[in-house]
Length: 112
Image: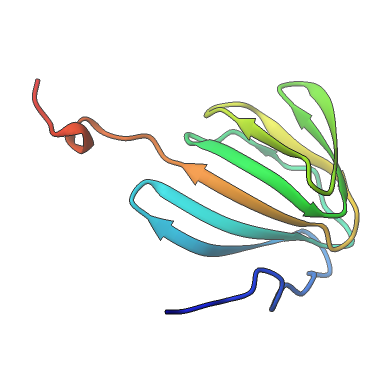
């Protein structure tokens, strides 16, 4: 059994965000994200669904062109191909993201 703590080794980067993969299993990836003092807004449009929770801090996102304010404990679901950008974030904000990758036909037992 390998017990780890979500907040250990969660040092804040000087700038940008740090992405740490905590688990990859089947079509799921769970990652911890730690935001730095300065974040350059970058738009993401991902092929997979994503559920994200802000564990600590505050953040302002733009999701599909709409502003979304988050505080610690807030979570949201981002369907695949939804444009989203972290516009502003408090230094050291910590996130947990769950990525749900699409299943292929072969994952369902195949067949035509």
